[in-house]
Length: 313
Image (cartoon, rainbow, N blue to C red; front, side):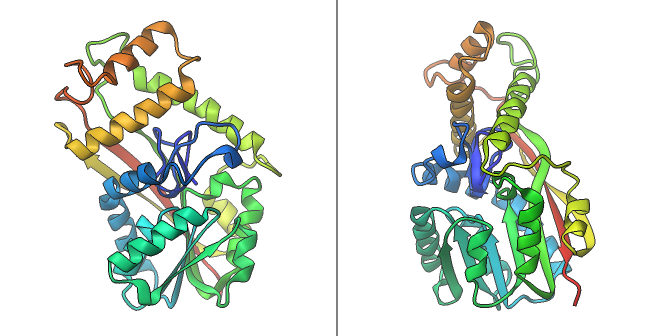
């Protein structure tokens, strides 16, 4: 699932930065994950993951150096399968299983895999994490959770459950944390400078409330290497990967920025002060020359962190 009000449990979350559950984008707008209509978000999740493909490709290339050729790769919280299919491409000898709570998203994942020629070694499993992993026929050689863990109430217990589903010598890789995304300069010539930093603060409040409202929510310090070690895993490593799409942004990047800022306005519109709300309205007005559809200074800059650890043989 995604990060803040954006991505759910897929690779790409939506709004700003805490996005992702599914592979490709998340963004939520409600306080309960169960309220999120992931299927309705599928196009946004896919668009985000596709835009972030260069970042994922670098992360997977790094994983490829860390991991011996896996037999089974499990994408836990796969969403519409953009990243699942990148795994199939990166590891041509592996079987890939996309796991998610949303059957409509997994249907899209299967269609994507077929379209890309991976259908013969691609499967899906529908159910809620982490319990659904008990249905695996074989342990995973590589289990990937791309911004899905933070949608689970007890993250420590979930990591332990993930570790239990690994083969001896298998790798658990989680994408959590990083930096808030940036789309605009600090001073855009509208309103007060620092709009995105103020939106970040609202997202942090949203994210804390989202976590608190999850069933079985347990507060835990987000020291991911320590949590991986507490799950019985060894050789923890962390590395961050950059998405750097400089100005002037492409149409696809502008569409992502527009969708992300629109979600932020929808979620936080009542919380923003009048000046910031008016600035967001202008940025999102397709007919305003100062809007993100037209202004030359729009970019996408994001950093996501991957933490890995290995199950003792």
